[in-house]
Image (cartoon, rainbow, N blue to C red; front, side, top):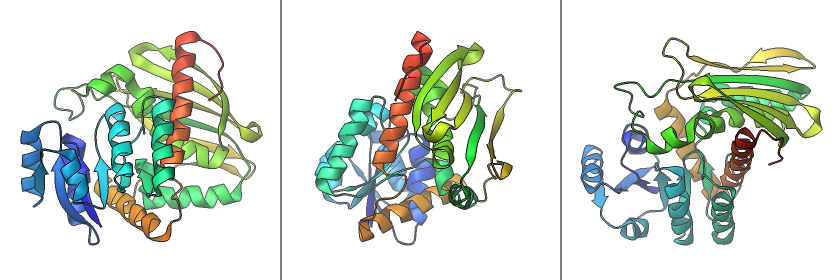
Length: 297
């Protein structure tokens, strides 16, 4: 499958372009970005072409991998879908439910395949864990903590404007929900509270009565980092396993998943529709934390 990368940031260069260039069944054709100089640099690094016009790139590829701020991604995803190009998207899918639903509508109207890169879902150990435990059933509670500290000198994401504005809820929340929803089910209502260092704390009630809690921030004290998920059910307690691959390996698996979805016509569990479901929860949580109310996605 011929791919184009849309974006010129660290993630586009170090993960998306690198993984596609190394994939045995993918061809990295070109790179487009809002910074032409960076696009040229990434293209040269991986033996692809730099494009000044996004529509020219769309004309030369079968699929796009997007590494852009969520609001920019949503607009270009719709444009690419209407051009008949399959979509390998980043999370969150969008920053509003309306934009997320518009991406889903474009995918459904055109019949293109879509995969949203919820990183954990393409880690073999995590994927196997979720499949096995979803089949087991009986999960009634979960807790997740994701305390990162990206606004430090030298961090490649320290200058990310959208992350500074929207924080851990929108950047880490998708990762957290991607490993909670498969075991506990869709969220029916939630409440949220803010804390120091831009922490957000969520209490989620799921279909069937299960409940989960999430604590998230991108601005934890450097010595107070924490990442982990615990699950509790009728068969006992367990924790999310550690990774058995790299971000490059996970993105390569996502590219494979997109190719399989395109070839078979079978939607992937992490398609645009699932991405939109996650956006609905995030938007409800954003509203809840600002108004101190209990809301439904």
